[in-house]
Length: 368
Image 1 (cartoon, rainbow, N blue to C red):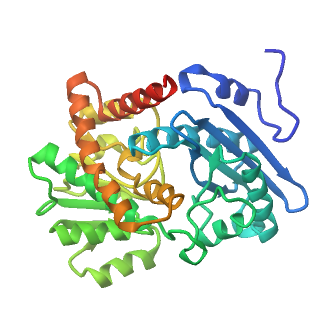
Image 2 (cartoon, one colour):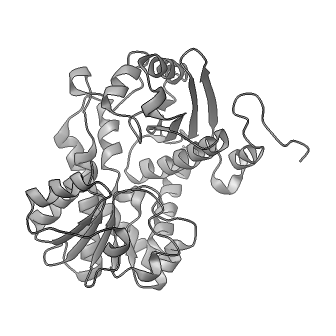
Image 3 (spheres, helix red, strand yellow):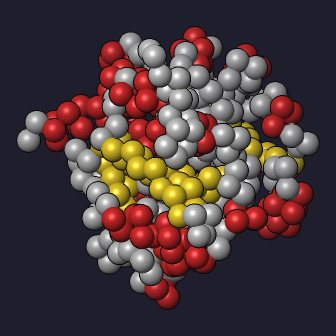
């Protein structure tokens, strides 16, 4: 190509530019490289699409191994948000921001305020919220420099923690999966394995127990496991995810921790017949969705069932109303069933069917 590096801010490989403009990945409208030397801020804001409305997506604060990795993550995550928002029926496109660095080491009020000024400079094309490494208290700081911030505390006009509705939406997706697989929209009498019982996972366990499911859990944090066992004595725990996915008689596997849970090593040993969880980017690479289908495992696309959180933060822009948000999150049940029906009709895995539906909605919006 004659160009090997981009030297202005990130030092990112020229492959990043190739990725940015590669049409088969859908393209990105805008990518902003942000730097504030005084505070140490280095950030990337990626706007994938505004076809349906202002791009909406969280801010991830993470110690990336390289600037190139950070840019690539922003591109992938923002594209995913376009699909998530489209399937959630929101009038928002997809965007995502990443702040480069260890939040335990460099996060400061000065840095967050600087970041807020960059968000504000986009004039509402991008609306931010919490993600990995950022919290409600951080959004309150960012909001001091920009109105285009959601996920704030109730004291500052926000909706607060979105994990409650995220878990509720996942539960609706799981009920739809049960309906499709076994004929009844309930997990009563089913054995459900939940990997990761943190912010979202512990709420999901509450729903499952109330519905009459037999629940098995695991988490790398002992205190998270203990909290569940103290509240629900009939829940059982296993040592790790490798043990969980091999549990005999498991009906449903719910990955609720890190991405990439479904990969070449885990799919062949899964005992569950349904996968439906809160984690983002569960499919480690293209083709895993077909491997699941070939094994007769029903996969509820992650960005569809975990959309309760983005439904909540989007509502915050209009004056948050919990009941209104819960009603919207309840529709994840119908959306998930529609995806399964489309997958059967087209002879494709559910993940591909969800992508087609989302792409159709975005294409229709562009044509208006």
